[in-house]
Image (cartoon, rainbow, N blue to C red; front, side, top):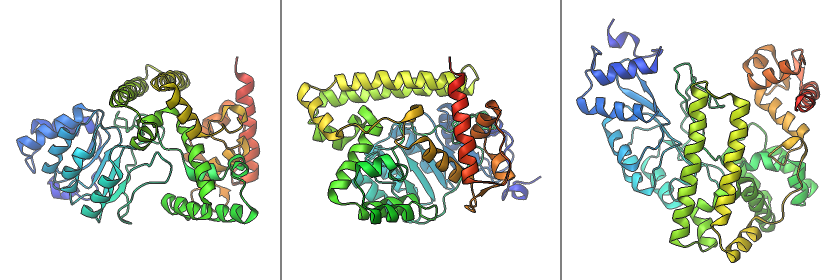
Length: 405
């Protein structure tokens, strides 16, 4: 069979098999250059998931731990590379010139805080046809240079579980708090003292017909300057002391170069520990409940160490920056959403066609929530409306709490 026969819709059976074949030169068509083989081996060794089309050309690279600016330089060899996800790499502004040369890219994902705002703007101008996603850990959305359709990888999962190929596409270690989620919380709305008109407009713009960037831009227009300041405090509280790694926060607190280096080292150590948990999940040597407990311990210890870097005046400035704490919520929810609000958000995510009904097909696509129901011996008859789902979801939460030792 020639490469052309299956180049359009070729399904990969095993990433490891393809990568070995590519790297050893055992493929019959296309004959990749030694430099291409070496680059594929480099990224594979660092945990990247690599897609190769029917012409044996690299088209997508997802993830990969500890990729550096020097590693990114090698990407120039892949002329058909369309999607590049560098969520867990250690790149910075020095990699931008190389990324700007990848004019064929259609989608580029970078870690929060990886590059400066100026570098983002420069990158968007050089890659006008590429959708660039950089989570803004200060709280206002992502950067997108065009409306180009993003390319999705059906084999990866949002939970960070192993894909059918045995590889994991890790989510960012410390994802940005979501304005869209926080602004639907009655706790936050009360804290910001929103007027009835503001609440009505927020409800409209947080609908699923809005993309995240549109939603958050619209929210900024609704809020007064004072309310935006309060919201920034909420987002910094959600992120916690890990925000000290952000240049603007470090500048506001007047961290010295030595303090910044210490903060970066603590963040790197935390990241390695969390990545180790991901590796254990992949090899099935650690289950998900235990991993959640260990993750919480790692984050808690890192927060203490990060705050210990600050001087007493800097600590006072940090506390002033994050503002007074929000009232805690029940059931251990990290978000300021109430359990009922959270249940409704779960329903919206599962209701893929947004018709207000959860079909049998939509329900069976759910893994975590359906397992929660099954463990609690709670059934959900489909089609189910949101009120029925919320009632069943809260029952499953109560059942989980009652089973705790």
